Length: 185
Image (tube, rainbow, N blue to C red; front, side, top):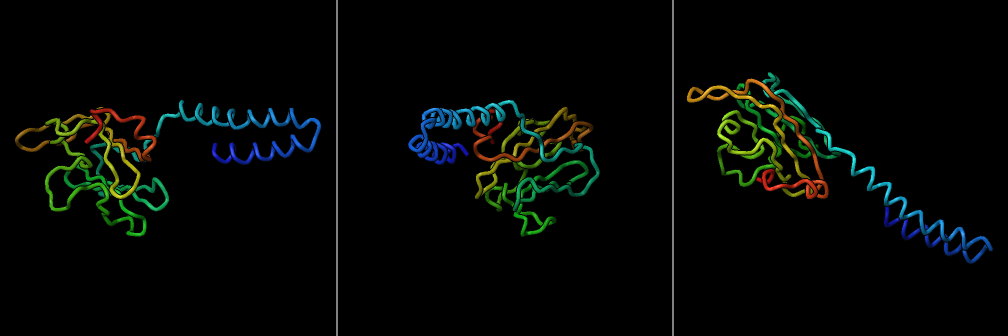
């Protein structure tokens, strides 16, 4: 938008300056328009906090949750144990019930991935409560945030007893502003 304003508006203003006696005043106003537009856009974006595209209880009994965070993508969450969750992103053309594996590294690996939400990983501190995971092949990221997560268990198996998960969908520009060493995988 800013590029459009800086290229089109001054070109029209130069034409107005040449054609009318009041053109000089119009030309000065036209110089200020792109600057004011840029300030308005940056001010509105600075106060806006990102909102999660999916929020759910860590003790929920749903088998599958899905949202369309952006055209062409599906963000899905599958329950893989009584209350352990697998978060994944797939392309919309693949269908809502298909796992796209766009968050995983090599598929020959096994174990808990950064995109998994498990009581054992939370209890042992394997991954932080807030982490950022890249959507492979796209300039998109998801942020997984566990809020007030509580676990119980031990050698007999860990399980969530409270809390919720918030999942955010972000493009590359918003992620760079919010990255901290604790949120990187």
